[in-house]
Length: 79
Image (cartoon, rainbow, N blue to C red):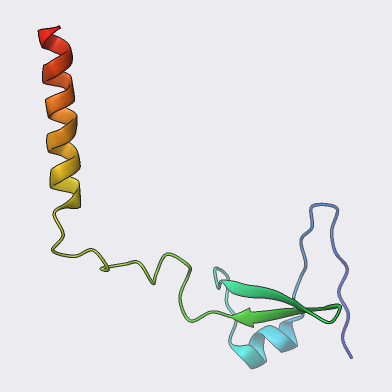
């Protein structure tokens, strides 16, 4: 069994043999879970924001927010 020491900043180095076996590279996101007193680290296929990428494609949310903001500025300028 391998071991690792937690740094004073809470950082942990995953041993190279495990990184190689699981194909974990710098920048890989890990899902962290606790189960019965154990810490479970699971490599994620994409980062937490990757699931949102393209989710709102074709939506007019930004256009609506920009129009609302422009309306607020115009209203303030009239006052």
